[in-house]
Image 1 (cartoon, one colour):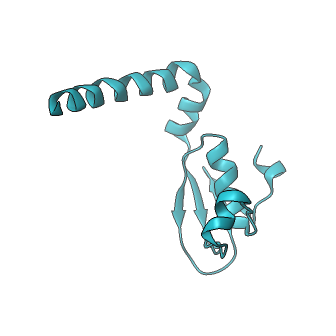
Image 2 (cartoon, one colour; image 1 turned 45 degrees about the vertical axis):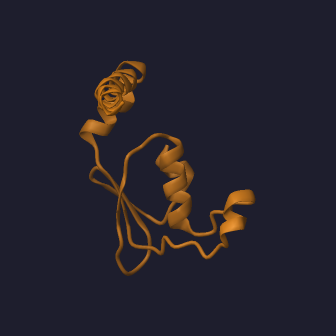
Image 3 (tube, one colour; image 1 turned 120 degrees about the vertical axis):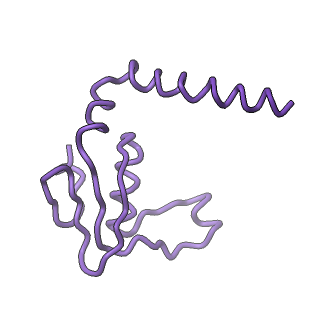
Length: 103
């Protein structure tokens, strides 16, 4: 039984990566060549657990940026820092988060 788990893990990961690569090659090229960093801002949401399940609200800029990037399958790294939110896409730095500016 353990062997089947190992074999399935070894099989499914390359298949999934192949689907991602051949299904959307432009996204794969973007992921490989450009890094996206969310820096600063406060990424903690002060919302109760039940509220997050049934009525999630992204009230902070950092949370909205993370949600937007995740929904568009963009990998990002989070660098906590003091000060206002900065979104660094490659060599471009955006102060704050504006969904229209990131498209």
